[in-house]
Image 1 (spheres, rainbow, N blue to C red):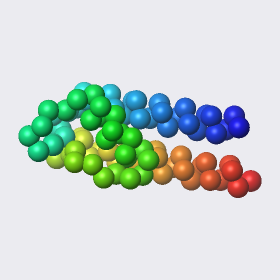
Image 2 (cartoon, one colour):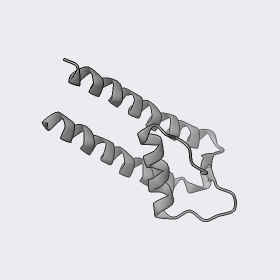
Image 3 (cartoon, rainbow, N blue to C red):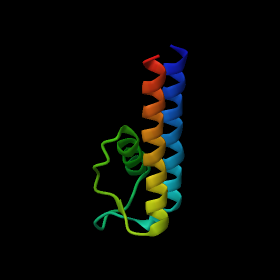
Amino acid sequence: MKRAVRVFIFHIACIILFSILYSNFSERYHKTGDKFTTIDYILFSTTIQAGVGIYDIHTHTYLGKIILITQQILMIMTHIITLYFFTL
């Protein structure tokens, strides 16, 4: 149970951290003419962290792509490690 709670807290921390990063680098992301809100960044970060990755915000700069790729790799590695621990 402790592992599940730690994994949950890690995912929430990643969502919050990357939401802050996305909001700080908001000029590197594009959405068709709309202004971003805090909820948009949290939703975008949550969809990436959940592995869905479908949203109408997308990046158009290299730095934005690197931040997005970093979150996706963290998400994939977390799932791999979690599956490993739960199948022991």
